[in-house]
Length: 294
Figure 1: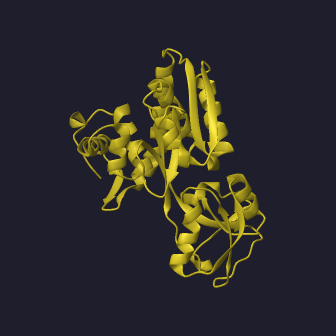
Figure 2: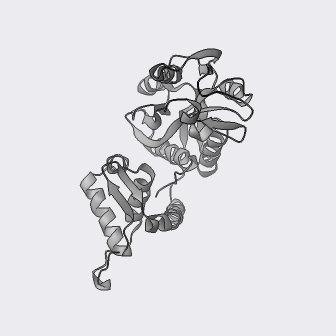
Figure 3: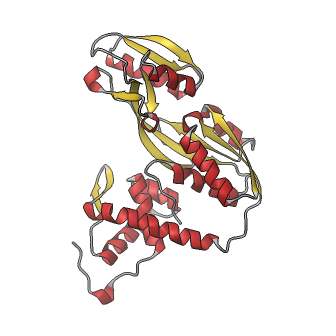
């Protein structure tokens, strides 16, 4: 516990709380600094100032990153609520956004995340005409560079350029009634398209020396989900896509570990910065475990 004379305490501010939220989300000073557009040393000073202000240690520090202490976990929901309220107050006097926006979304974002993000943006910015495109993200960077898209959410097993927004594990999944032995042949369902999703399951199984047979190929992420939910096959999904009709398989089933999935938002140099940043905030606010920041 940190103890300071009350007269020496650093004032509590939304800037300190915002940095706290970003570090809690990323678990990494480097990523937090990139998101906030500041140096790591400046962010580190802000954390110390917040801890001194509250008289509590908020993070465990290690070579692997930063994780919340019990005190940090207690602060997290309060900080989110406080920053959200400040953000709403600022928006009362903002000029309404007007214009057009074309945004690319990964097809595994379809459903709740996509619906919530677009609904949130439309509610807050009715003057912007939005065209959303959903599919494989392999072509998105080129479309953003060429100005065909104003912005796009891109994903991959390694962190990309742009605004890093999330990191989650990839998992093996099948239907609730699907069965697989620890040493038998894996009935594999895979995305048959030119992107990293296609090679992740086969590369992992080959490295582990695990026998498999491709029993289902599809270019559609929704079709892949249907095949897995039926229990007909085993496949790889982002952890956030595992629902009540699916179960996760792991090393106990003889399946190897998989890489994490990193997601970043790319922005076109030709786009309206205010509009793209507003959409980025709407997308981030719908992600599991991610909260908007003022």
